[in-house]
Length: 409
Image (cartoon, rainbow, N blue to C red; front, side):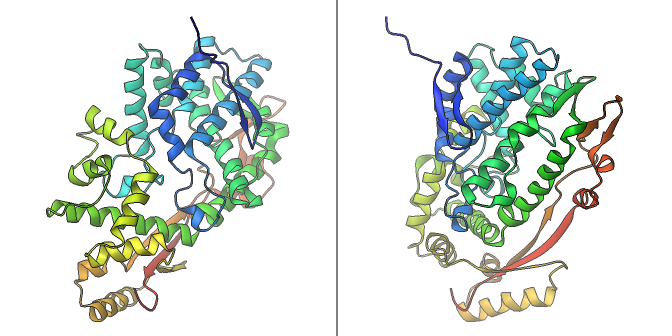
């Protein structure tokens, strides 16, 4: 009888060869729920700014498992006891931490599902897989939810320095070509230790972690909150909202069955069911792009123009300011559009809108990055650092934006 070799080696452009640690991880990677991540772009529509940014959530999740293996080995070498069951649970939790992401990352969360975060959907996927794999994911789910008594295990999954951030900063820097975000993830991991079941950073690692926080700040302003990426995502959110609105009025739009389902159904956190999950598992970037390509020729003025902007990268103009946008400036752009195209105020609001963005590289009150000195003293990195700008990084910086059409639609 032929048995499948489950100890595969993958070649990753960031870390080189990555070994799949055990058969459970292999089987989870092979599962259709996880294979879907091959069709979910890691950085949404950022490729409209950085042409190389076509890497996927699949790439990222595999990279996270690799870094988690490094972390387990480093901590064990330093005398931290991690059981085999805990080790496997860590690999499962980090592998599946992003499995609930919808097409183009966060666009779904703000358009055709109501207040259902990707974390909540990830948990639904993990629970469904736990049933299928006879309870083998139970401890991983507990760690993922932050409910396990050994806090450092939860911090490795979700914290101010976790394997998720350690991978995506380095990976996104590589694929965008933005060198400022390039952190030495493996060096950072070697500086980790555990004290009283909490993650700490050894004193000699302080400068590496300072660079990590500064790199995070640069990547948010230069990449994740880049004005072109921001306006593109906002347009996609409005495309899906308009499609859902037209569907609710009886319009039948050309879309895949999975997308049709979410356009016609009202899905929220309270009524998210296994049926919703199955439909969601069929939904990926290809459904959205295919629909947008069709809809750019639709009769509806709003849907047609929004889709045309995305497909042909002829986006809205965006202005970002340190102060709130004046109401009179906003109202003026709305009125211009109404007069020019004889559309309603509600329709004009799809093309003229405002909002705010915030960047905080480090949160002082959330799972601090603590520096462990040789004398046993523990101190938050902001207090321990001689870098004055780390204190600035701990303060949220908010900017305000307004989007409106160029000369014509």
